Image (cartoon, rainbow, N blue to C red; front, top):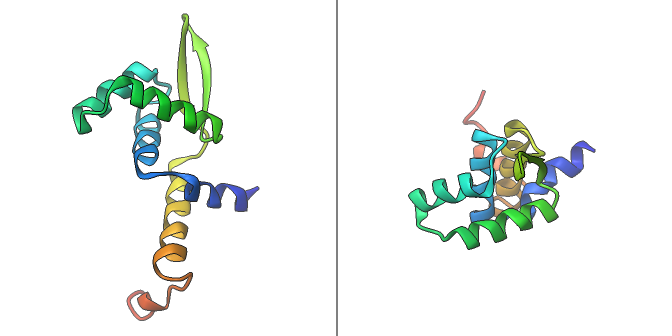
Length: 107
C-alpha cells in the first residue's frame, strides 16, 4: 500500500495540488471554505473549485462526510505522504529518477 500512496501525487495537476494542500491545512472543509481561500489566492471561481474538489474525490485523494446538511472534505494522504510523493515525482520527472545531481551535498 505504501507504493500506491507514494505514487498518487503524480496524478495531480498543479491546481489540484493547491486545493489538496488547502484541504489538508483546514480539514474538514466545505467547498465554500476552499473556494473562499482559492479566490483570495488566485481568483478562481467557486464552480472551478467545486469541479477540482470533485476530481480529487474521484481520484481518491479526498473523502467526504455530510455534516449538518453540507459535505465536508478531508485529505486521505497525510502531509508527509503527499510531500514524499511530490519529491518522488520531482526526482522521476526532473532528474530522470536519479539523485546523483545531489550527491555530495548531503553527508
